[in-house]
Amino acid sequence: MELQDKLKILSDAAKYDVSCSSSGSSRKNKAGGIGNAAESGICHSWSEDGRCISLLKILYTNYCVYDCAYCLNRISNDVPRAEFTPKELADLTINFYRRNYIEGLFLSSAIVKNPDYTMEQLLDTVKLLRELYRFNGYIHVKAIPGADYRLISEAGKYVDRMSVNIELPSNDSLKLLAPQKRKEQIIRPMGLINTEIQQTKEEKKLFRHKPSFVPAGQSTQLIVGATPESDSKIIRLSENLYQRFSLKRVYYSAYVPITNNPRLPTLQHPPTMREHRLYQADWLLRFYGFSAGELLQNEDDNFDIQLDPKTDWALKSLQHFPVEINKAPYEMLLRVPGIGVQSANRIIIARRTGPIHFEGLKKIGVVLKRAKYFITCQGKYFSELSLDSQLLRQSLLDSPQKKGPLYGQISIFDTTALIKPEEQYSKIFGEL
Image (cartoon, rainbow, N blue to C red; front, side, top):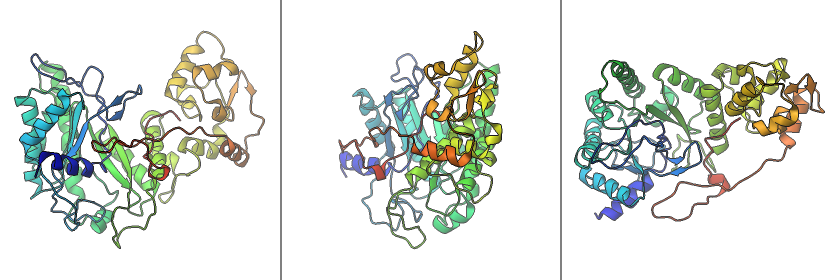
């Protein structure tokens, strides 16, 4: 098969994997090498400051011995198949980089032959890039569940980030839709990778030239909507993963109904708004000091589709409001709808020099359309509504929302960037 045909098949097959953020690497260039992932941080799609960064996002192969009901590449599905060699994939990556098409590599794979063989091929590819081509740019590689950990550990010395995809939120769901996979096969390498990351950090304090191990950390992906788990169970699982394995990110992927199977739900469109709410809740866990139990109290609860999780929590917790902008501690400011991490920090700094007036909050970055219902400024409440959850909810829902263009993943072979609203992928960044 021609290399161009392999590229078309395997780049398209990789589009359903969303766990490919790549910020946080500290890998620097070396004398005589090419590429650098450290100076500004290579990020897939969008960086924190708005820059669009590109990775070559591709599968090593879509030949698979597994028959996961939700997966396009399952063995029972009749799709075009292809497989690179490590040399072909390394050559492709380096040539794309030299032409300024990409700034790094995101490499995953279906399971060909067995997990050990697949992991060996991924390891050979990254070793060629690092040792033969002396490529020092960003590389994110999937750790294959079930592979010998010695292979995963060796790969961790060459890559910037690794991810082990959980995909389904519970063991029962794995048994239903992916019976060849085991929860232990997924969780165990996550724990081993985390242990080695922490050990490497400690050794670097003693040995200056200690080689790095997965310096940008590890991540995982959860599929949303393919199985009956509630949002509460999913976000509690994410919280547990952050605490146990110090993950950089948990990614949520709305289930795309690409196949017919009696074990799968019948959906007309992917549940992208549900995915979006989970991303917002995840943001609250990582940066705003919330716990999963605060956001959703019962195991069967789901997030409100109409209101973001922070606003929904505030309406259910009106006993904490209104808060005085000039006196409230930082932790409480973060819980006010319309105040994000940056604006909360600005408030703390600004009030050291004098009292903050309501008119100045907008300049600080506070979204007053939401915040005004939950704050006082110098003792004055600026909303015309009383603190009644039903009245506030209706007013918040009636507020006009700005809508911007929607963008999809850039395809090597398809120049269409705009996608239909029902096919949109959620925005990951933004303050709440």
